Length: 113
Length: 108
Image 1: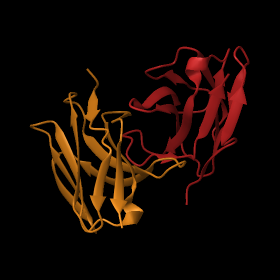
Image 2 (image 1 turned 45 degrees about the horizontal axis):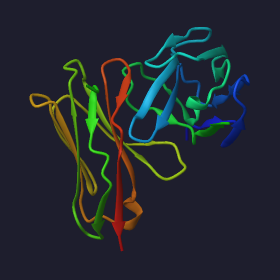
Image 3 (image 1 turned 90 degrees about the vertical axis):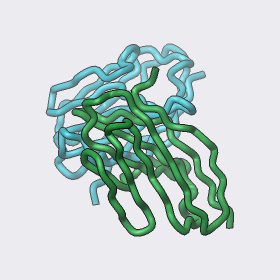
């Protein structure tokens, strides 16, 4: 089974802190994605990557950056955390750019206080 | 207007009932249509996918796509308490767009 592992299930950070969310997949997938999930808004794409060192902005990239130095690892960075970034963050990976069959991690519930 | 609209519910049904879930969309370029199931405190897992219009059946689950109406449906027959989850529709041209999810509770 493909596994997508997110390093933390729950995080509490202070406003203004720099926050790193880590995601690792173990099946050599080319494509990786970061979403946030909020009640009533569904999943919104923050950033995605189709290859190492490649990144593209999703629908809501403001306040975030990403890093993909290795194929299996895709990191989401909150440059200066704010309370409106309190959310569930989901990482996903896939082999197919046509994008059916994403595999998601279990999510990181981030609270910014 | 959102690209994908999904009624958030919640939906509560007795065990054994048929669950009907729907999404509408506005982007004619969508070619792949999916349903994900998400249990509480877990990530979404792919339940079914279809390409273009038509029906697809997998056990108790049936997915329907009507591209002319820009409308997709998921039916769950003989629903079980283990089907209690949030169901997300998703569609793709080159990346996925998700509905907001419908929370379903199947009462024993």
